[in-house]
Image (cartoon, rainbow, N blue to C red; front, side, top):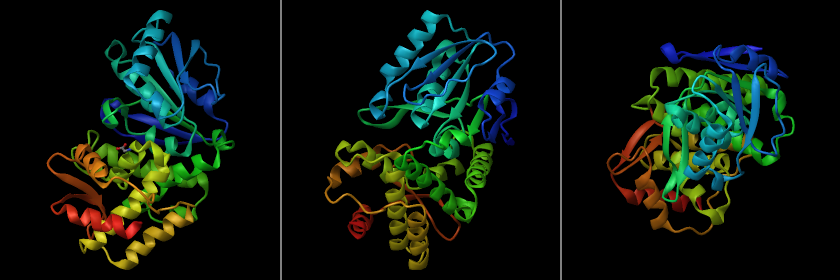
Length: 334
Ligand code: GLY
């Protein structure tokens, strides 16, 4: 087993990476005072490790429709009926949806109960489960209600990826591709475990520097502004990582139009995305005004529209003064 520490003072925690390591790693991470473990997962995940304390499994639904305040309310009610106390522990086993929902419910239940994340998807391991962001969606947009709630630990059991559907791999690689442009560089030449560790290492460093996203952490949203808008369009049926891949290519186009990067760097974006089997073509029809309204509601949009863009100083948040550029870049990707 390998370990990467997310250094956050008293909220520091380990991310354990290994194979067939879930049960062993869980026991090492259980809080000493915990008498009960509420395992939050989905019926199709099929992983229920036996812990050394009393445990009960709580299922949540599949898909973005389950990522709602109603799910949080239901989960908290079920925990209360079972008798989960604030010194007990929640264990989230599943993809980003499960860790986001279980993380947020843990943050608000009894004003905060410890949570351990055991991501079972590549996307969860390299991004969603690390860094303490938890949230659910509103009709008005993705992840609009949530909190920062750092886990007590994260366990990335790489063997849980063995039955990952192809589409889920692409989703994870959308995020892995993102890290390439954030400075992790040639991850595509490494083994899967090394790729996962490379992403976690970089994310841990960014989160340590800016836990609450007052600055640098926003770069982790590279490709996400358009991605979140595309994901809200149910007709497109795009999964997160697929939408991120399109969003990354779109961000490269905006950066090129603004003169921040050259055509060669745009081609590097296309090569990396293609290497991971990711498509970056926009859906053929979309409502531009709707997409822009999503851009305006984006969490980075404190004033006007902002995008995370590549450039001479690396990837950074850039305020977009001229919205015509956004439309021009969109046309280039059609
Ligand atoms: N997924 C972006 C972040 O954790 O900041």
